[in-house]
Amino acid sequence: MDRKAEILQLLERGYSNAKELATYFDVSLMTVYRDLRELEEEGKIVRRYGRIELNKKNELQEDEEKCAFCGKDVDNRFGFTYWLRGRNKLSTCCPHCGLLIYDTIDEREIEVLLTKDFITCSPINAYEAWYVLGCDISPCCRPSAFAFGDKKHANSFAKGFEGFVFGFDEAKEKIKELMKRGQRVNVEL
Image 1 (tube, rainbow, N blue to C red):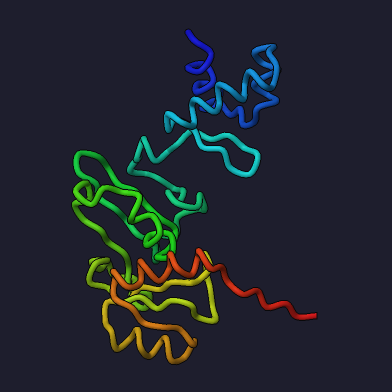
Image 2 (cartoon, rainbow, N blue to C red):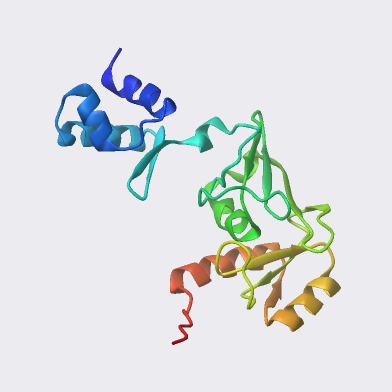
């Protein structure tokens, strides 16, 4: 078995950083980093915050518990669920991540795109939902994004929490724009 295949097996067993792998194989860190770079380019692993993880996006498991975009735990009360052609599903923790990941997926692969209404938690077609962006509150990722099945409810929520209402395509572009510019951080002393 080659070292890269063995690295993937070790990651499944709980190994999580380059130093552990170098020790296991009794090779230099540079050798392990070369293997990791190749595995990352092949889309088999993801490096996050000093940790190495298997790329779950390629597996698309139905019981996915981590957000496919940011890696947080999926909150089934208001995340996105992408049902993909010939595969299972891809989940995100919140509408923020659901909107951001959209452009990384081939539209022809998406059979159904669902989210949940923030008020009722009922499943709704994400393409037909109304999104409130940039509110004062943020239960998950920032800038905040909330989905609503009814524009009237979205407008009322935005009025109460100082957000802005957009349809799907506008919300998708606006969230990307906000992420490029960054968010202002309020610091209280």
